[in-house]
Length: 459
Ligand code: UD1
Ligand code: CA
Image 1 (cartoon, helix red, strand yellow):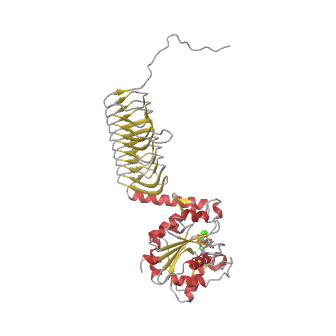
Image 2 (image 1 turned 60 degrees about the horizontal axis):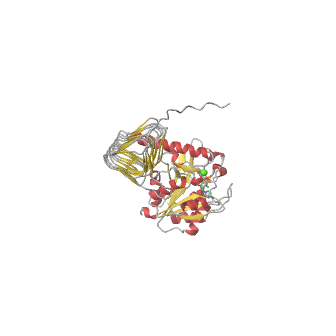
């Protein structure tokens, strides 16, 4: 049996009232992505042939969010228990012979594929497989009841459990896998004769045992993988656990973190050798840092590639930027999408760069806006230089040749070209092309009024 026979059912019909949010619980974000997104990417990573999400009353936002995703949607309204949720799926997607069904929860975001290996293998071998955990405080959870030989016999919900059963510390995480057709049969036979008058999915265990099916249990690789989110505190706790886990992985790869408790990775961060990251840096989307990159405190990098030996100084904000080797960026620099820096470029404080290619060794060290520009190598951009790239309707390009010197407080009114080696005098408003190798400036002649006196206060 191959991974292609896997049907993942994601339960997400619970209301999540304790989040006290207008947004459904499964759309709350952890590490920058909705909880449900974590679960769906797990399902995709497992090679599921089909994934079905059970959503509930008020779940329109969830459906709208997931409209483009390759998953099926089943409404469960009212929510009459986890068993009822799975039954609703079977009404629309009857089990395929030979397939394995895996039940996941939409509000359990950090489960790792490795922890499901044993479960899926057992299900493929014709067993009912449960993901269980041993907890110090098992209150609230379904308890795993085993016989004297240690064989799983049933799951008893906390509210239905005897005092003796409540003392059991092995609990049900809710995640389970089984041959799909058997699961469908067991679920069809559920009743709601219990403390909560709900259809408990957990009752399939006793049903399987009655039919003589083997039931096995395994534990997740890390205790937190099976933890669910019910309120903002639990969400924040899992966020910190996940961030610390990622920080540990980075350090195992040799990255030096000033403080592993003060880094946030909301996406994927790739790192070379000898990368150093100071406190408070946030990474979003896909970011790669080549060998020897140093990030000073409190930088945000979203979808960036930073070349070897580049230093990003404190409080810089980089989005969709690409740099070659040995650049110096910041402090307080802003690189926006399309900022493309060749090697050894210096970008200093309060410089904003958008959709602009900057050639090797060029410098813009202070207070500039460079947008829609092609800037050559060895160019010096003086303080306060602005590309006036937008005429209110269209955007135009500014081209600056190699070795040009742009005096401070220059406005380059695009479209305009500065020739190689040209010098622009400070304060120039450049409205037409500046020839190569020449000084161009636009400046009213300076004059001094010899008879002028400061006004005095009138009585
Ligand atoms: C369930 C298990 C319990 C386990 C616990 C782990 C049952 C009967 N009990 O408890 O053994 O220890 O999870 O957290 O299965 N959901 C629906 N439809 C419903 C009810 C729930 O889709 O009608 C979804 C929820 O959105 C959630 C998941 O199922 O993602 C679990 O629901 P929740 O109410 O948190 O679990 P319990 O019933 O308390
Ligand atoms: Ca729960």
